[in-house]
Every structure is written in C-alpha cells, then in structure tokens.
Length: 259
Image 1 (cartoon, rainbow, N blue to C red):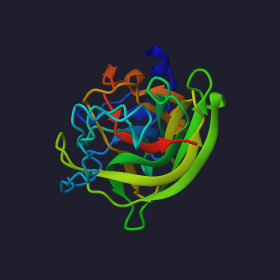
Image 2 (cartoon, rainbow, N blue to C red):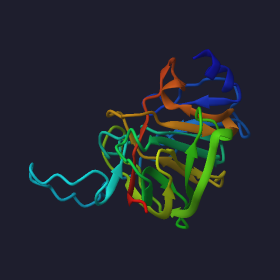
Image 3 (cartoon, rainbow, N blue to C red):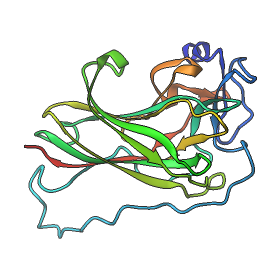
Image 4 (cartoon, rainbow, N blue to C red):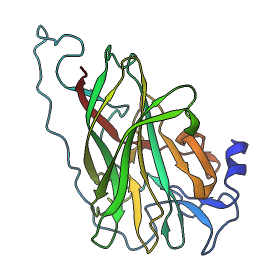
C-alpha cells in the first residue's frame, strides 16, 4: 500500500463516498487528481441503464457444444452501474488521460480455439462534453507475462465517441452501457487484455466509467500517468481514505469462435 501512496505524491485521491479525501499534496490548477464523479458540480439527474437483450434460455438438455454460437466474456457479476463509485485522474480543468483494463485468459474462460471479438461494451457512469461527446478508444491486446505495458501486443484499436451521460445519484443505478464494434481475432491459448483509454479532456469535460461493488471474477486495472500511476494497477491496490478502492469496472466482450 505504501508503494502506491508514494506513487501519488502529485495527486489527490477522492472516492465516491469521500469526495474530499486526499492522498499526497499536488492540488491546485496544475495538480493531478484522482477524483470521482460526485461533488464536481450540481447533482445531476439520474439516468437509466441501457441493457443488452436477454440471451435465449436453453432447456437443460439442449446445452450447446463448446465454443458454439456467440461467446460472451465478462468478469462482472452484474452490469449494474452505481452512482459515484468510479474514480479518474483529473486536475482543476477536467479529467486527464485515463486507461482501464480487463484481462481474460481464453483457456480459463472455456474458449479452446481462437476468438473473433466483434463488440466490447463498457459501462459509463458519467460523461460531460458539452454535446460533442468524449473521444476514446478500445484496444484488444495479447499479454505475455505480468500486466505491464511492455508485455502487451496490440492486435486492434478502434475509436469511439461516448455521448453525454447524466450520472446517477450517489449509490443509485443509472449510467449507460456503451457498445463499441470491433473485429479482431485473438489467437487460441492467448491471454487477452481489453483496454478503454482516452487522452486529457480539459475544458470542464469529464468521463467516469461505470462500475459497481458487486463481485468480479478478476481485477479491474487502472492507469493514470498524470497521477503517477504509470502501469496498469489493480483498483484494490489504490488507497482511498486509508482503505482500498472498490471499483469493479463494468465490461462485456462479445464474439464468436474464430476460424
């Protein structure tokens, strides 16, 4: 834990339930801040979650063979998005560059062959752009070794524009599930990494990904270079008010068996 405190000497860490909490001393116009979506301006109106259509339910004796049909991967126990639960690296002018990661081992997920990824759906808690939307990108990588930038091999990256989303009130459900089409085949046996990233926004623009505190099968990872978080770091290893950050990023990967 002390390692991460040292890494945040230029930043301030604020959580959803404790928006005034501080870690480090770099406040002010140029100070980098890791902050939540609450307490930045007036309380926004709550939104409604947009969900994917329910999957067809098969009878008990009609289970599909392995890797047949659509494949959906997610570490999220639920796709619910909870208000004021996410953090981002920011300063006084707006949100700075942020990157979020999820890691999937295809064999562990029961995908015996290659996987053709066709869509990534990411949760968005709040997006404030003034009407033009927030430019972001989704990338698919393979991973060889520990989750570090040097160990990632990018297979594909697509741009997306995230529309304005009113944040739900603290602790209530809302937000948006934002689908991003992509077409890339991940080789069999790979460890796949899905990344959502954006550059510095500024100008009073904000983006906070959707998350909750429900269970997750594997960790959420964050990177905020301007807050001295230069490598993907487990959210649970980022301290907030002397406790871990409980931010489980909502993400779903859709695909089909590869050729």
